[in-house]
Picture 1: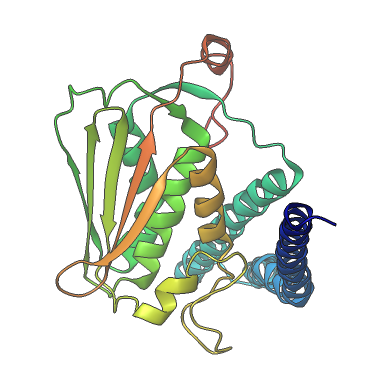
Picture 2: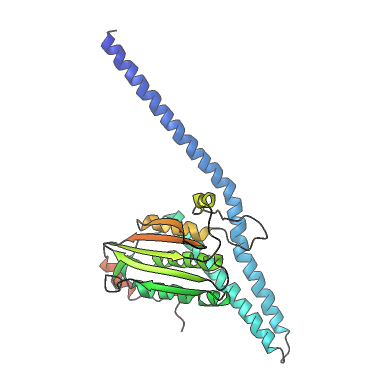
Length: 287
């Protein structure tokens, strides 16, 4: 065998070994993900079950208690009705996230780009959580920069962006201290919408930031923690931002709490979805 042929054979062997190492590394990562997925599956199902079963149990118990109230216990009935509303609201919101997660996992999350009034979208999200923010005496300030700069007709998937905003606002309210302030800044730069939501809570430390958007994880695993939830909302935010070619950054807000900054690119308009959207009924509209 000539020296040239020997060198070529050695080069091919090195390339083959490198390929084997590369495939071995990928296989190790896949196996680790499968192992982690199996380990988290039980935890996820348990938490989701709690998010559904616990509100149902509370609603059933409260409704039963209302039936046994006397005519002079109207105040008690109102308090119980308010508690039923809170439990039902929480259940409804978590079910929306669960259905969204199921669509993502099943690959049924196609984009539906339409023209969206961004100011209306944020006002709608704020109104959605009005009762929750009022209960904690939290003030939500919405600051829209340059309304005429394409903010009234930004093309995106309205349902997905709205659920992103609602999940982030939900967390901002949950983690903010009572009587705090939540600041929301919205602006358009070139072909992107940029918005920032700053809460007034205790903030997030460096270690927590590394896995805050990992699916099925939550920041506080303590059973008796006031920070309830299984982190599914944040995983929806992450998945939907990937679909919308968006980015997310976390930072301290300069005082207490955390700022989450989102950027989302404008999509190409789909006239078919625009026409269909006119015939769709808003599921949150009351009749």
